Image 1 (tube, helix red, strand yellow):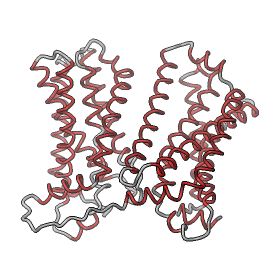
Image 2 (image 1 turned 90 degrees about the horizontal axis):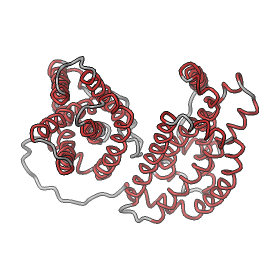
Image 3 (image 1 turned 30 degrees about the vertical axis):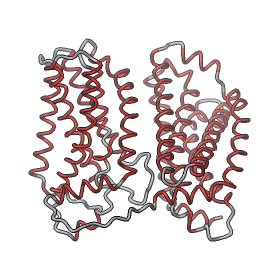
Image 4 (image 1 turned 180 degrees about the vertical axis):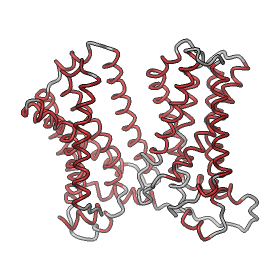
Length: 472
């Protein structure tokens, strides 16, 4: 069992790392308890419900990211398929690690209740939360095994991506709607706190958890190996083409163009993912931040463009998806020129989405020509600013080159870009709506974007050593 664990997971953290992580988890759980009671003292009676909900949500997000990656794209599994090892050992090893990690998260979040509340109440919350978490884990594994077995090799990767990301978005929408109800409806928390108790949750979900566990075990036993090999055949597809000798006029553009077009998973996933993400982000941004610009025109259109520009997968994976990056150190390739053309490539693909959004906006709304041109200039300038920042963050942030997971591929860069442009846009809304700046909204937004783009170009021109890829 220990040998299988080492082969499949290939992780061996030292005792110091484990103790450090435990201390950080304990501190985070206590900090959450302290901040909640300081900032939301009027909702202190519902702390047990909220902290259990937060623990379950974090664990579900972790399972959506971790389980499909480990069961479908873990290349170490094929190393043990030649040995007489039952499939249940693979299931126990990978799922067991996930459940242990989720239990640690629940303990870290709920443990302040052992100090300040009733111990038995805390144990009930942990038991109820882990029952829901195990049910979701079993459902995710059951779905990914069925998907890997039912779909044929040419499209099984796309089906897995759709399932993974749609699951992520559905949970996000569900959580966002619950948070909005809790903030806008004063009677929502007392009502749900009276209806949902840890005992009721356990009694309701335990039978479903048992049934899902049995179904998962049976399907895993008979379908998993063939499904895993089916997914591996998708990742190993190679196109056999005869490349003729041609003269390359623009090598940097060609390198980037081939990087994007040859990575069919990235190209498909970026377009599919961006459409869904833009819809969800625009709804959340308008619902939560649109009130800052109450009374201003084109708030929805601006947030729609912000959401579209900040979720550019081509830019945020410019270096991490480039399999040829390790060869550039041995070739006469300029890091600054490569950075520039990666930015331009992401900008061009993002501009396609901007044009489509502009067509939709002008088709659905009666917008004057001048305002339409201002929106287009704003979207284009924001697109370049976000593309530059996404490429720069992907260059500077550590990257895991061994991961084949497509769900959060480049998402850390996109999250940081989204936070930055949302903060800038919200600040502009606040300044204009409160008459601190006596300039119309769209011209002021364009002026801010021009300043940001100018700062990025100056940094690219004068800080030449900042664009060396140290991860090659």
